[in-house]
Length: 274
Image 1 (tube, rainbow, N blue to C red):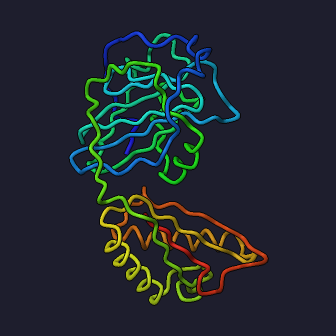
Image 2 (cartoon, helix red, strand yellow; image 1 turned 180 degrees about the vertical axis):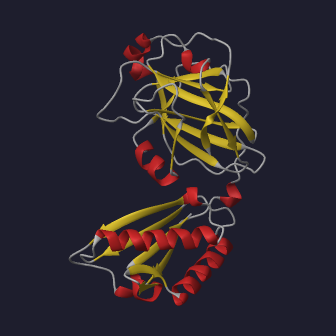
């Protein structure tokens, strides 16, 4: 987790000038492909810069443990591995005085076997923590991106990645019924006892199929149901999964409405895991 209260100081290094923007066609390597999980002795970081409608002129200088790593151009990404533990990370656009390397660097405890997706915020201030995004969201934005290859990393704590190919798993889908999962109590939509048992069974199966959980998506499909009710359902499911020891930062919510070709009532709550 990133926390604004963690601050460390560091030294100074030259970074790539803004003129590198003119060399963008030569700055990129291969197109992004989903990265495999790493072994538990390592942690992996994917830092990327989306091709959004709001772009700031100049490269985004990426710093790892107070050392310059690369300068991301729009549509670029970098991935690297570190030893688990406390590390400082940051990426700042238009930072001519290299203050991002010397001021307000944020320390994060990175866990072994985990992959973290960090998105460059075009409007990020030096006092802002790095913006972590859910794996599913990050990989969606990363699809058109290419690896940044034009700069030489000076981050000495970066180590070669060792991937745990055996734990790379396909997605599993669990279909549930909102009629079974939920009940009304004092005007609130809550998880029923039967619904709690169903979620517990899902988690047991999930852990058997996925020894390492990378992401869990709760998809709620509505036939014109009020948004407030959908939010209550999402909150109840997120709480139940968290209480069942699924890390909250791995859980994301999707809301979907349908008029035709709707799933049956027994399949209007879907849990996707990988």
